[in-house]
Image (cartoon, rainbow, N blue to C red; front, side, top):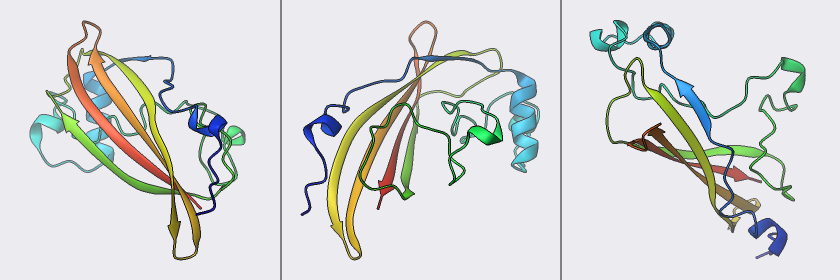
Amino acid sequence: MNNLLTPEIKDWIGRSDTPIPLEVSRRDIQKYAIATEQRVEKYRRGDEAPPMFLFNAHSPLVDLDQLRPDGLTVDALLPELPLKRVMAGGVKNTYHRPIRPGDQLVLTRTLTDIYEKQGRSGPLIFVTYVMRVETEAGELVMEETRKRIFR
């Protein structure tokens, strides 16, 4: 193993983004349902958000010239890593209740793990985030675990 992860990099584990407030509107749900070609009427009417409605909701809205060369936004919750090429490593969502119009949500993303493995073509760094979605009153709505792989 190359041991690419310094103590400074590992110190990022446990850090969280500033919580992001998000107001869910019926129109937002309807636009998402149309864009993703949903066929279930409760989604098309905007009564309930489809399962992937909050995918990347934590990402900032930026102008195109602020994107990295790979088309991604700069991630403030990621330390400088020695490997630069990023790949998706999987997403697991756990829903505790439906997302409905009028919901006032708070999204909090936490970096929960950074570890290294040896791949066929060289070292890999895995970064795991957990995003908690709660109501303003603290009711858990959804949890998302996402992995990114750097090579």
